[in-house]
Length: 367
Ligand code: NAD
Image (tube, rainbow, N blue to C red; front, top):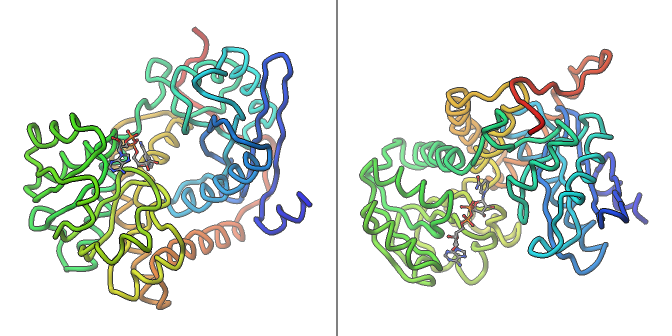
């Protein structure tokens, strides 16, 4: 049964990790390592069943293969989940036990932070294995990826504006930005610096107030964001906001934001394309975070990270070209770009010589 699932999803390896003493029940899934070691975050969640946890890690690890491939990284896709409640079940032993399992894979899987996990948890993992990214700056890590994700989103946006209107002039356009968290607030700041008209909303009133007072944005209600007359709708909160109920209301001709899994279904992506709305595929737009942590592998450098964000512009331009070339919606073009890269690089790869696992330079482990 499990192998049947893996045959369908294309996964290479699934590792079930158990430590009774540490209370650890975790699953690591390596989807594809053709481009390099599988990199993807660790999620901690109170899954209702083991099957639910397995489904989640399989889905998320596959997503990382596509994201890393389109980002142009020499990394494959993987992900890990710990079954547990992040508000109650965290301990040093839990994360160190998890770290030992990661280490046992000898660099085939590299972990990072995801939902339910913070930099302090990663400190424990880091004590047991070097195959961790997103570690604290005091260890030579890259710190909070959000400003890079926001800057990368701006690059994706400029590619979309250029494709749609033939110019990259952010300041000439209007934006409806949903979500003013770590990425959204930084993103509206960048938009306003270029003089754009920016409408904002968030569940947290103080964040909206901050965007109005400090960045000169215009506040709208939580539900009103879908009706705003703006050129670009920018989802920077939760996934699934492009759905049957919202797409008739959205007037924007471009959709470009940092949120993950923006399309509720593939059919919504087809429908947006049919209506002539340019959807900038989420995982290509929001790759700034993973690009940033990936640089920890051979020695983190902030300037290099900022330069790398610019490649998001070219990746999006290529996706739009493929969509036009093959007459397909942009979300399918992004998948095609990932698959083409994996197939091409897979063909030219030389056999592995000796131990070619990743080497982490410029980081200090221990206390
Ligand atoms: P965050 O939790 O800091 O911010 C999310 C914000 O959205 C919060 O302020 C929250 O109040 C608001 N929000 C939630 N539901 C809302 C709703 N219905 N309407 C309006 N606002 C709502 O998260 P973040 O790190 O800024 O990430 C934002 C999105 O970008 C997420 O989907 C995340 O998965 C994705 N993403 C983030 C990064 C990163 O580097 N942080 C990288 C890749 C993708």
